[in-house]
Length: 343
Image (cartoon, rainbow, N blue to C red):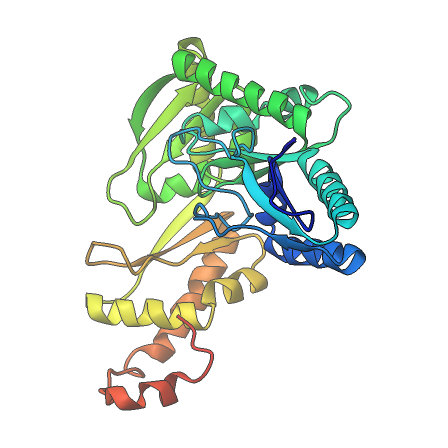
């Protein structure tokens, strides 16, 4: 844990300590920890400045490769000088070691950049991974956009859980099979979310669709093996036709359509519609859409969707001719936008 080094006088105790980064990486805790030692022992703790690795917001250095992990096993030794009466310096050292030991009993590891087509299969095996922890405490959290799983808890148990996840990723990378198919873009809405994931996991399959703003109508069906693909394809088709979908094309030209979309975003019009029609999901078009037309997608039972179509039509009737573009001097933008602008 530490190695005593020669020191020139009895008032300066120099030691090299492993595990100190576990404390120092938690900055709010670090200041309180060192202050507590100084207050109780009157010993000054001098830690040399170091080049800190880029932190990810949770106090751990970021990895760079696929499947990379945050791991403190290879943490470097840090030279520390304890300045004060020798007996008190040893007391301060004992306190520091106790704090480090307490912090080091827990661990946080991350599996990053899990392939998008593998992630659904990994999520379906959560219970299997948790079983690897045994009776020790481990929590697993998911960062869906980053395709990242974080394991936190008992040091040894976290290691076993992460090893189990990594092994599963490797197995699926070697065994999964896929097929591509085309579906109208508006039906892609029905292939995402918890309902779709649950239906596909029952047949050991997953589906990957392009972002809504991207062009193309191709989707990819993935199976745990090639024999799972027929059932996966059937499940995708059932989901794609499970609800009525209406695309409400906004009036043009494109510049006017963009104005409408911007206004709808500001007033949170999708939320307004779904609050009055809970059985319908409403999706406003993205301003990043490359086409010349903009459409609102409405998903639900046909009678409910028809009611939303009527409400939107009536609202647009009030907006036609009621909007225009004005030029405002840039120096006045801050006054128009206000202190809390909405994007």
